[in-house]
Length: 267
Length: 245
Image (tube, rainbow over all chains, first blue to last red; front, side, top):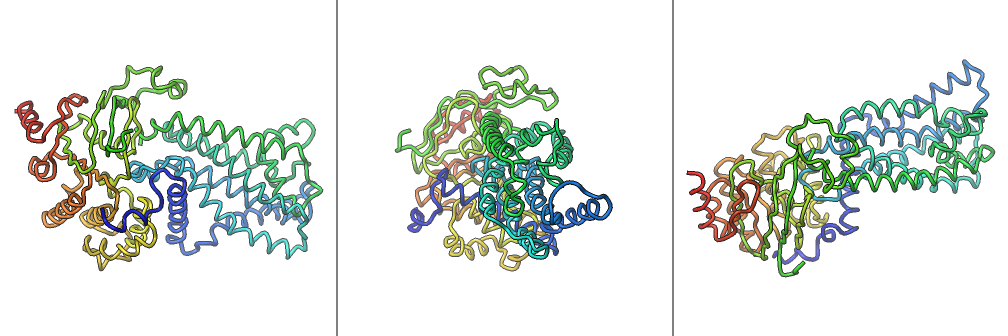
């Protein structure tokens, strides 16, 4: 044994510290690859929600006379679009979580759930880095945050739970069934309009209130918006979003345990 | 597990599907491995048991497709068994599919930090050993080159020099070293000798009798997906040669 071998390592294999270290390294790598290979770098994580906000703002305030959402509408849009981009990009990346790094998965014995976690973490970092955009528009539009801003970290936590659960289901299934990649993209597109992003949960017409209750994103986005739009708060969707996220997480853990050995053989 | 053993394998078995074509039902995927429909599958390894003491050097012998590399991957923990258990006392430095851990778009320097970190080295250790790794791989002039621009030989050299700097007590070597040129292979072998002198455990898969004889004292002979002989390397090689002549 080398003399410096025992004290210097990052914890023994399998310990929490070692796993967090691996998680962080892989997330940092994802971010570095993204920013090393494109000169627009940071702008990309901001540009997508900005362009979308611009389009919806133009369509719904200049062309149609909107009866949904709240004032200032651009702040209303961005406050849900930024977390939506986090959700959307994570789910699309889950479909390639194992196949893109197949060689690395086949050669390193880290817990396989880290391959899902690093996507949530790296996209989450990009989400946090895009928040200044929201601040700039809020200041520009004269919107003042209230105590509801305290719901923000809760929303982040619930979204992490939901994403972890979905990732543990989607990532291994996509290794087994390649078709699922396209199906997932289609579902995401439909989900965008089924989620209160360009409108608010309170705008759902009679007969469609169940959408706000079964879709956990409705409650999560309500929490994100609580800082600027306390009048749109609805307790029902928020409670169900937490419940659904916990259930999805539990199902995800179960599915992942069942499929883990098979995806390793399949890669 | 007996703390005195480096590796303990008991009743180990793993199944693979024979063809990719057969449609698999969602139900069978979730069924436990005992209840699963198995007519489309075969046992790539069946009922393999052995224990390894720290410092032992073991060569795995067998024809292609008999499960040697699968055994190595199970010990490395990158495959999970369908039956039995593998227990490894301490970390493993795996020289299997070694070039796989690198990312084409990142530079050599970034890749070294990432791979060494994933194998459990701290920042300080990496900083301390970085120069040694680069000079061993003879890549001093390519530290800021994107990995994908390296030649195949360079890639293997880099991978070997990173993994061989790990402090893990168990070293797994698949037939990766067949790739490099002769001079570099000699250098790798010298490095493995050095690591063995440190008292590490070696698990070695090779078709080259001379390599096996050079490093290993004990042999495992795998035939028809089962462990048929576990004994001194010379006996194992005799049996293997007798079976295949």
